Image (cartoon, rainbow, N blue to C red; front, side, top):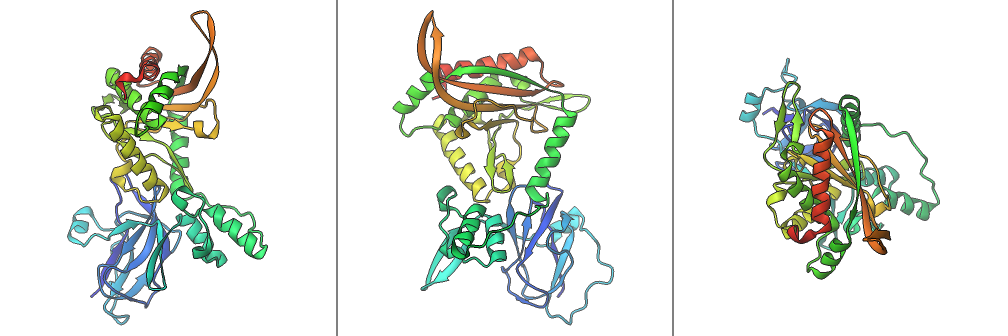
Length: 388
């Protein structure tokens, strides 16, 4: 029986995805549940499983093809003798798709290696995995330097050069997948949204003290998320989206935190952050950041953000300006916390200071409103009793 292999719709806003590596070749036997191919969205790499037993009858779209969601990318069949449809539709309609078994897509982040009758899971990024295969590198012998021991591209390059003295030549990398979507969205944002920027310096001394006394210790990002969420609740127009002939004020305060990954940037979302305790924000942030770096985020983890925070303080950056992440209207850029002399009541003291810059969509937010919002964020962080 002929069965279509469909490009899954991985989230409400996803309109197309890129065909990654086919795990099966035409004519290969497949069992129900076998992984047929990898699919790359702008957020992650995922696996598509077979819902039928038989053979991989036909591959329509090859590696690297950018394909609309719900498009037919291949066929399975009972045998290679089974005839394919003469005029198959290029794409199933939504109602037809509902009648079909939806392909299962699971995040790719670990490679299973069977050795000495034991299963060992190796954490490796999709990019590192692909490079290792191209260069014939045994990933079981590589020590990962990424989060949680995850193998990243640089680990594969270093291992190959150390083992064989081979230098992996520089190459031109096609702009596709996550990097392509990020580039297109940010270019459009910067060209179409009239940005304006407001900066201030925040005395984080009390946050540093409070954090040292609290167990378990929240991250500074957790404090900034909570302070921003409360400041938005008092200035709801910050939580807005420009709709052409109207401005939508969004009720839920969903804070996105920009996370750097191998292939670009992704923004997982902490929902209703204004209503969460700092401990709950901390747990959720830990979970989302780990999933982001392991390539395990699902659409529900990164869709629906209403405000974004981008922190480069860990890279010793003092200040920077970020680009608004549409359809949002504001983003807060965070610099590092560093001790510096400050004049307080006519006296010089050493304080832990942090510079922040907020970028706003001027179509929705005026300067005075943006300033009031930043004042509230500053107030909550300089006297953190209400956020801890």
